[in-house]
Image 1 (cartoon, rainbow, N blue to C red):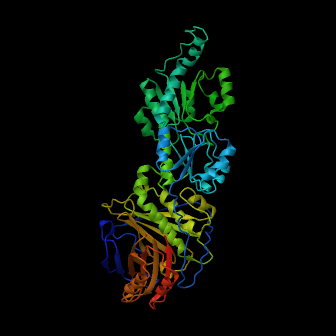
Image 2 (image 1 turned 135 degrees about the horizontal axis):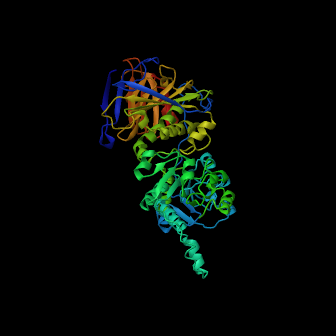
Image 3 (image 1 turned 120 degrees about the vertical axis):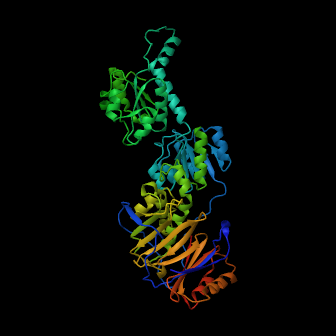
Length: 583
């Protein structure tokens, strides 16, 4: 395929305003090349959701001008409601970017009456963020911040349906929680609280409260996450034998600390002391019950630095009575998480959005915008009432498939596809949920591109809509599907393929696509029409498959041309069809 390029300007310090004329073709053109060298290996994963349709209401008159819903402008200064006591350092962080109101001790009714006035709500464990609270937010409430680890007081499903991001502060109090657990462990072993109470009551009962030594005792840590692993390190320093149970913890991490991962039954059977650090989930609710206590050593001591709900309290009372059990920086982190979410940044501590490590988020950030815009562009090309029945996303990368986490990209593609044809606002939080509710089925394929020198995580992203009609015939590939492909260049999303045509245009602002007879002077004619109306052209690219046949002109414009301007473009004799797309 031959091509010629004329460089117009160089934003970002690199020549990037380009006219590209590449070989045109008829609609039944050669298939799209996904890699230019090396071998290709494919691996496909299908998301399970019913194969139904996403309704698209656009029709297909030729040369019709079409518009879609555009993103709403963000508020200049968001409002944050702090419902429970938060450290002054965290409040200072919030005040740097938001209007902050502290309203501690509100009743549920007062919270319901107040929440619609705010963009974010920060709570601790005492405030219940129920479905009623989220619905009372009336679409304005965008972020709920939980100052702490547990999020059992927040209705995650309702938050997801409402498009409200939920973030927590899982690391700021990790060491504090671990130290607290060790303090409780030592106090329990030496009966500190009981001896203190007896002494204050005027009794000297030294022999009764001697307690036991921790050295050589077996500590079972139930939940080997951030806090549990820190407790293990400190317990090893006290000379304890540490075992742990956590179905998701890597064995090498435990070995590095000096702990041994065992089953739940083995952990509770061998332990002299048990320290709880597991989250409260349906699987862990009341997991310590009569049956569990029955398998423990007589005289076992239990420390709970997790959630109260993991223990069946009635069963614990029975175990105590029988002698089986001898019992007994968050503010800044949550403020920064809420602030980042309100600014539209990817939240590493989000609990109802794709959980992606911070380093992966940073690396994929340029591709997030590309993924959403490809989805938004593709759905605007659909015509007819049949709607979208299937979407296939192809990621081309030099990396091993197991080293490429595409969950975040898939969510953003879904957002781009669903939002322009949905009456509700869709964001990262509820994109997958909304797609599932509409029966949108997504298939993902990862194609390995053998290029050892490639540093970028992705070479390209392709979005393919199958079994649909298109209101722009040039977007149909030789396989009969609507196909758009893009890549990141100089940190900016670019459209590189439409249907069977190669183009090169920045996905910034808006886009005009024209299918035309390939002949001299077309770029000048279209450019003059836009220039006369003071419409700035940011990028322009022309792709063809053979000389003198058909070509596609992709034009990036900063402003939206008025209807008459677009009609003048469509009236050029060589233009066979065109479409205006909002990105």
